[in-house]
Length: 185
Image 1 (tube, rainbow, N blue to C red):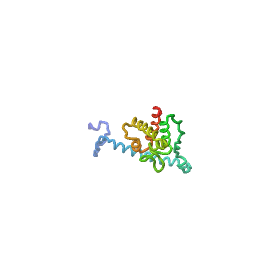
Image 2: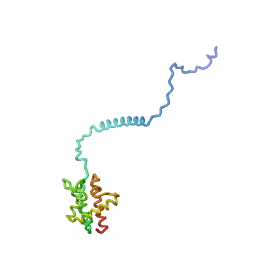
Image 3: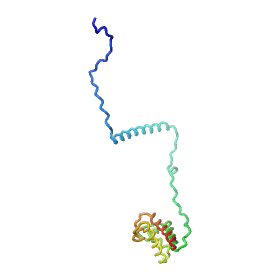
């Protein structure tokens, strides 16, 4: 009897003739590749969710919605009555000019445009009602107020025309009214 027949039978797997290629280490993905992968995965999930929503809500009766019933916009601001007039003549003139710009409109490039809107100096001139001394004093205070905030400015008309919207010029007329009142003018 041979030695081989006395040993217990051990099942060993038979060696395979096919070779399994070694797995390559995972390559590090770039940020763009990771973002593309996440975007693709999220798009698939969103598509699945959209289908699930349609299936789950198909039995619910709905009526078309008119956007005019849903979308609301704020009401246009209403102008408040003017504050009590300043007691000094130049301050009161500048306050009236400010109110005229708010209610009648502001323009650049002309004292008065075709719609009746006025520039800063045009509003002062209209509210001065022919009093050239009062008009000159108001323009001087306005130029002082402008220079305090914006530095070296040539004139009120050049400052007015340098702006594309009314916000800053109208605010400066209001600030000039306060400055004239503080100076007792």
